[in-house]
Length: 179
Ligand code: XMP
Ligand code: MG
Image (cartoon, rainbow, N blue to C red):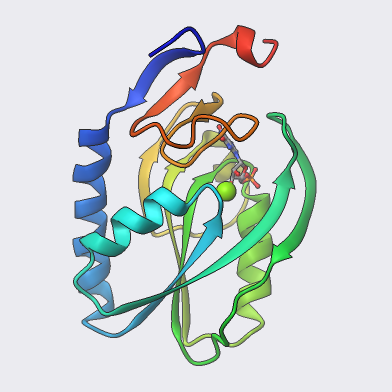
């Protein structure tokens, strides 16, 4: 896996199996209703692609890009819309698809922003969740994996835009980010 990665945290097989479980739970919960999946760029690209294909429910997809992190590994605490949705979500069953919830700051902001657009329902599915997310009062129904508070890359997640294409989730060697 090269010198930059320390270890594989979650394998491709584990991700596939977990997304299949989440998809069947989501299918059941929405009872065949059409779902609008809102992916959060860029990290959620892989989760979106694989989750969408694992679902039996009819889906449409839209994307938002927000910034909460710079090129480093620390939250700036500032959320900014870089790209808004193309579609009106009023009256729709919306499921936010996220790669990772860390401080929960991005998600809290997204929930209030999208919630104000009057969707019929607003849910969240995230592949990964870190322990800090428990400190904020947000109800995330669909969580792939609870992981330790370590910086992870792969499967959509980047460090300085690299490693998004890894098929697994791995931890970065400290020397890569100066740790
Ligand atoms: P918050 O703290 O707002 O963070 O819940 C959500 C966003 O922060 C990024 N993030 C990470 N990106 N490896 C990454 O590549 C990580 O370990 C990590 N932790 C947080 C990510 O963009 C996420 O959407
Ligand atoms: Mg993200």
